[in-house]
Picture 1 (cartoon, rainbow over the protein chains, first blue to last red):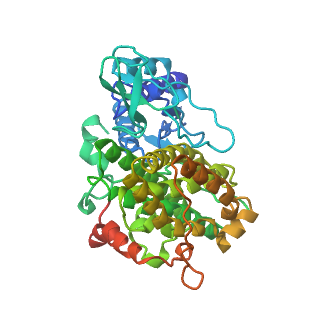
Picture 2: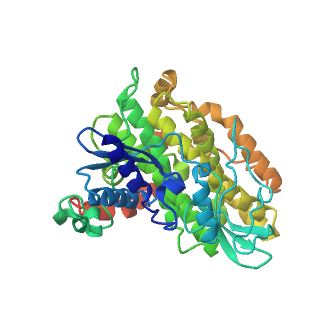
Picture 3: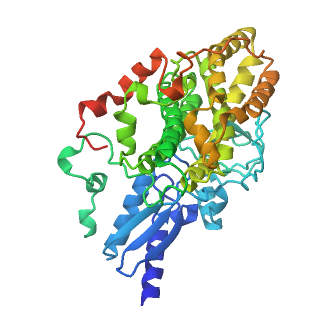
Length: 168
Length: 295
């Protein structure tokens, strides 16, 4: 019984979508870190911000609460976890497919850093394939885009601009 | 509670409706985080330290927000606004950590909107008035290079909350630094005019570099218990990065005297330049006009 309740609560929390990338769920993005059900039936959901200033956190809390209250859970508590910090490596294969289908280039592997972070002065470090036509010939227009977690790029083959979820 | 009761409006206004003022009713950014002060650490010192780091981010964030709609390109609007947003996020965590550590129960809003100028602990570099775009890129380069060096070390802080905030911020700060460094190189190694203005931008902010490496009594005590970073140890690394950027940009390291404080006291002691008062007036006026408002 309890196990079913927990599995249900997890499934409901995992189906809540991201407010800024509504094609993806919080689970696809790796933002949903943990779901527990305590003895009194309270569902405790842990989420982590992609970036410190992510303004979507408030809306995610609201949406998680609404979805679980709607499913009949009496109490819902949404907690923030900061450690370990979110990494774009946590975006699931399913999440990457959905990003590409939405015309957003998914991130490559996150940089592994040890020691001081070297200053990046040369041309952009990696090749990102165009999500529209697949050409690897793309250039960065801006290291930031409509949200902090994305950069803005342009495809030199099909000339379409597109967003790219940054490696973090 | 049925779903109908969880309207968008209601969920934004979890407090008493009558007190709702503007914007949304923000949650505690550290909701659910264990904010116990580690044994052997003075909670007031930890709070004072978090205020220093939080104020640096809050004030620079506000300065960068003042750029929005005034930048040369749409891409730069987006970039600077995003940097400001990252810094505001860092400030919210750090101010919330400060309020939890000193036992005063002051939340982030109380600390941001209801402290006076002499209670702010940011370094003076971040409060300087907006200059031209080159000057701003010079400021972001200095501030983010220094903050990155500091936060990389803070990831090993004995305060787990501070360590987690720092680990998150490091990835963001590396982007900020590289963005500013890219513009310093482009302008420095550009036309004679852009070179001249970039050099002038560096000259304007360089007098405030020395202050970044001065240690306060609070930091000394917290270094001893493994919580804080000794800012004096950051100078070599910061200067090495700046020298590399300047060399690539064909710019000269400014030969300017450090701007002294007042009898040896400066930003970390609450002794600021004239610019901070005007900035705070803008930042705080609405919250102070509606002291019962919930944000």
